Image 1 (tube, one colour):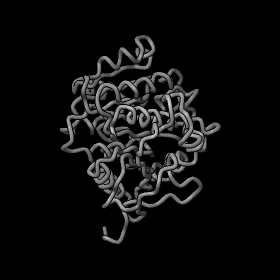
Image 2 (cartoon, rainbow, N blue to C red):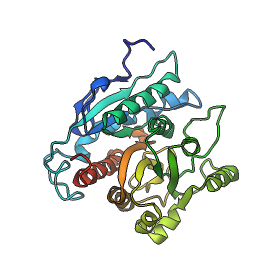
Image 3 (cartoon, rainbow, N blue to C red):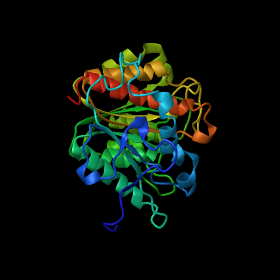
Length: 319
């Protein structure tokens, strides 16, 4: 890659930054408490994963900003006050990781580079997907910053070793995470139905020691019981595949399924993790904006991010 080519590109249409943040194009001198980043797609199984609807998710999330937060000074009843609680929090939008039509894998390396720069600057990375393969380069960027407990909301297990010869695609983020030395524990919440998992993947996940919490079990025991399973005082990374959420509040996904995680449960998880230890990063993935209804899927995802930020501000993360 030539030095003249940037790692990211600025959003170009409509609301050009997420949650009214300022645009940050200089990644070498990043000065922020929170950094938003779009990664439109990860390692693709076919060309369809590059040009599909999920690749427009970062832009759609930005366009829904004014429904997630009407404006930054407004009182938010989820948080007990305005988003940043009157504190001088600096949030920036780093734009989207640059893709190259002549090298359809180079953006994955760029994604890892960008997140390494964000984490190295001390900012909290919050990533807007794309498909779930984007979590792999993001998690790799935390190398040497463990131990990290990985928390996933998802309908699917995501322990495939390879598909079409691709080992770091959207069905494999938990398998690849399990191979990273800085990932200590994995909790997978909201599993349901059949998805892509076969007995082989379930066995591999259980043998490694992943904590598998099906949606029906979550509904029976409640999120507080799940939170008690997660070690206190940890460093947590949260990845939310929106197909793991209740499809009444997240209809715009490629694999909608009834009985997913409710917003109240996911919100409780977010606030509980912030209270237990330190959330070091978050991503939301797998929205298909063209099938969204009144932007509710983007708004649901955005409100989870808002709750993470608001809870982190009030917990003194940025003081």
